[in-house]
Length: 270
Ligand SMILES: [Zn+2]
Image (cartoon, rainbow, N blue to C red):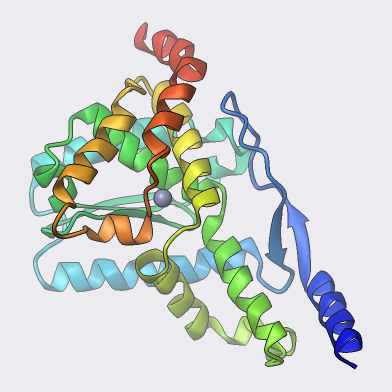
């Protein structure tokens, strides 16, 4: 009986999921088959993310915390734009995404890029870590990579697959009408749930290539995690709760720098 049930569940899951690879692998060789819930399209996730992002913008704006420091905003925007112009290396459709960049006055150490290119950088991460332009490019490159790889949709897919397992029958829910809960899920994967180690590694590697192509020194990426480690001794920042670090991270970043160094050197010439 149990076996039969298990088989049924497996069939349900296989029917409910599709395999995709959201990006080209680039010089850093990110190449992994991803499982997405069939009922959850990229468009649905992007629409929900746009709503979730707008909610954050509105909240920050009402509190007078949005893009208050014009100089800081201009600095973040310039770096973001340079990174965004190279996202087509990994997926051509990224050039048609409705990218947005904002800076929130917030002492917490945090930054994110919601699905579809909705970037937010907290002033706290720049100021408390005294980030250089190269280091800031590493943070944003990492976040942009999460969005390019659609890690948000992948994590939402996992949650939905779990629903199938517990028998809620998410397939029958009619997800298009479930837009409110999808917005909640985007918010949850942005602020609440930690990324897996696999997602972190992919974002590190792809972020490294993005920053190099945009003309930022890839050696700076490891600095960010060193600095993060120093400030988090007593009080782990927000960023680390959603982006769990590992001891091998700095080593892996450094090992991959030579792969993207020629791209950085070529970009520096312009
Ligand atoms: Zn991450």
